[in-house]
Amino acid sequence: MHRHFEDLLEKLRSNLIKMGSLVDSQLDLAFRALHDGDVGETEKVYESEKKVNQFDNLLDQQVDEIMALEQPVATDLRLVVSAIKINHELERIGDVAVNIAQRVEPLKNYHGFVRATAILEMGDVARRMVHDSIDSFIHADAELARRICKEDDVVDEMNRQKFHFVIGEMKKNPDFVEPGAHLIVALKHIERIADHATNIAEDVVFLVDAKIIKHHAADNG
Amino acid sequence: MTRLFSDYKTRIAIAIAAGAVVYLLLLILEDLLSLQATFLENHLVITAIVGASLFYIFEEVFLSFRNRQTKILNTIVDALQRISAGDLSVRLPESGTPELRRIGKLVNQIVGNLKEDIAKLEKLERVRSEFLANVSHELRTPIFSIQGFIETLIDGAIDDENVNRDFLQKAYQHSERLNTLLNDLIEISRIESGEMRMSFRYFDISQFLSTLTEEMQPIAKKKDILLEYRSDSHEVLVLGDRDRLRQAISNLIDNSIKYTDRGGKIEVGFAELPNSVRVFVRDNGTGIGEEHLARIFERFYRVDKDRSRSVGGTGLGLAIVKHIVEAHNSKIEVKSEVGKGSEFSFFLKK
Image: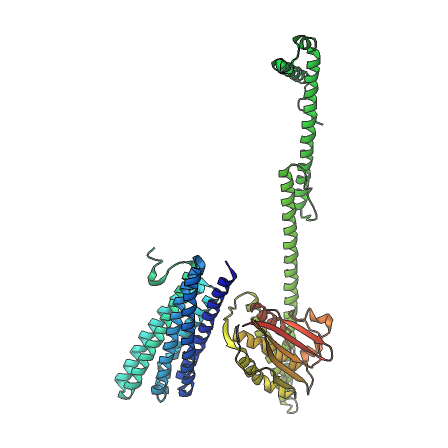
């Protein structure tokens, strides 16, 4: 493998990690803003989103260049294919972080309700899944990636429980209808974050073990 | 020398047979060799003697070869018996047939590897027992102190208003020291067992170091030490585990504070290189003698035992730093001069 190609792959990997680092801290900012009801902090989330989008474009260009000029095969091809998919997932997580930040303003006066829903308990699991999925990519750790996939069910269950809790509160108190609606949307966003983290983990398993596990493909042979 | 056939009658029979074979061969080849039939008839006895001689020569050559191999095999068996009895100083001759040479070479390699493994295990065992001895000693010191203060309080000092508060304060300080020591121990065992996964992310080293320096200011101010962040404020992204690096650099700054006298100065910063940055923590403190430099990253190694304990060191701080830096594929470097100060540094990938 010639030096130029190696450099291109290394740059691709390094930019993907940079984008992952950015999304990881963006998510952290969004959740902290939601927890503290701090509208000022949401500005940082929007700023970060611009950078994430720049990385999205940069990675697309890099993938195009490698595909067109180097025609990678085997492991290198899997890295490039995974990069396309992980890039897409990270970009989507960045969007969802912005969506969560947008809930901070309408929920800032309902701090007690937000805390009672324990939405951040679910947020922590989802955020850890994203964090671990990025780690699994960096360390090429398929075992960790497989563990992440199992955690998705935990978030789904939490989503169901919290959804019923919010509905219950909305029924009891009409003042909670509007913040309740925002909370349900935020819950849906968090659930989506966990889905994206799972997708990244599945891509890592594909990258490391050359096995497709999404939609339980491995179970079906 | 064991003969091939020890019975003399058999030997004569074989010698005659060999002579007959030579004679028959000559008969077959007589045209080819242009020999006269009369020559053969007249020299029947000579051919028989030649045949017998050939048999003897063959036997001698064969026997000497077989004996040589037997000797080598016996040496190998002797050597293997000594190895199995635990003598690893044995070396096998790498001679004889190619197969025997290979056996000799392989056995020598196995013995070499065994010796290395045993040396490693012995070193590990020595380190482990030294570590255990150190840990128990380090744990015992604060525990004894706490017991001492509490016993004195129970024995009546609790009612003495001049000392009771002071004794409790001291017992509390020792319990804090115990806590720090246990935390460090847990930390180091987690790192060494590979249980701790590094979370590498890109982050701005400039902001990271300036924030960290700011966080450490109160401890430096207590000793009137000037703690400064010395680099540019422009964003430089590096790859590393932020939490672990925070711990490593805090340990380095903390050490500098401990070993720098009042009114001293500590500088924290980084130098940007094409593909990496060099992070440094330097002070104008007491410095470290050259003879200690190679050992300061060992667990519980102390340049000055009394001073280390009095400033509250656990003896594990630098060992933790070394592990964290090495987990970043880097190496911790130290430059120091007694009386002038020290500089610790390492590289991080950009």
